[in-house]
Length: 386
Image (tube, rainbow, N blue to C red):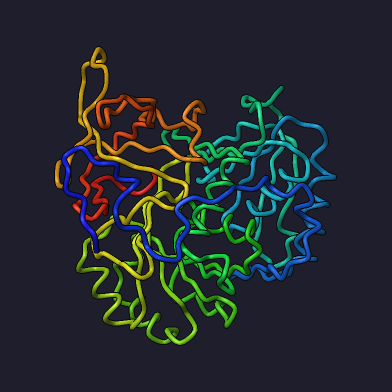
């Protein structure tokens, strides 16, 4: 593997890039005929099982019940409800809020609520109008706002999210897989981004909160994405060993210590790739399938660039210095799916300048800290997403 040696180096133009993975990809617009696609997507969880035809029929019924409100809120404990909401948003052009905790108050007057779990979406998913005079949130363009406890928000603009999913799919080879199995808590951004990737790419999706529930996974799933918490459990390695002949690889949300990844790989016989996400931007780092560095968040995915910049408090400084291999600093990002002018609800994210080869260039500061090694791999200290 070639090495980067200069203190001032361009990390995104490293001397090494994994063979077969595109460095950049010409991004396409989100299909306007999203629901008219002829795809084999289907959804299966501990509660629900439905194919693409049943799903799109549910979406159209939901859209008809919404009226002409500026936005709508989804409150549920199964990803099916927010996948229906996202498809409804694409159909109607309305923005949507997802309550990642059901105890939260909605920002939109119209509420899509999964009020029970009978297994029949027609019975469980209801559209109601709340008593509030007007919605307290309106987006200028179609967007998805994730609402968490303590007034924490994460905003995903629909077009940017589609570009992020295209880039992640190109890097991870996701489009060539047969389906996705998703394991982890409902109210997490990693779960959200993985599930929406399935829907937008047309890959069948199986979901469960815990390992025992993954009996819903069948032969269609060739990739499994697992949350950081479940990746630490011994049971996951045993489960993966039973599925290793059908799975291509496992993606886990980082940061996780190298010994956890090595233990999972040893017990399962599968490649376990650590990934790292940034709120409102999606999964931005991943380990390549052929060059997996245990303990690392990986390298920036297709269409993304990242550097470690100098930590400075003073605002008068013309540009932050670029840190060399092994030097601690702040993660800064840019790329085709990262619009630095858009507020994604994370106050830590702001435009900053990084001085590279004597020139100041614009980047997105994240207040995520870590370092980059001499081979271009990133080691980040903060939790993935928020």
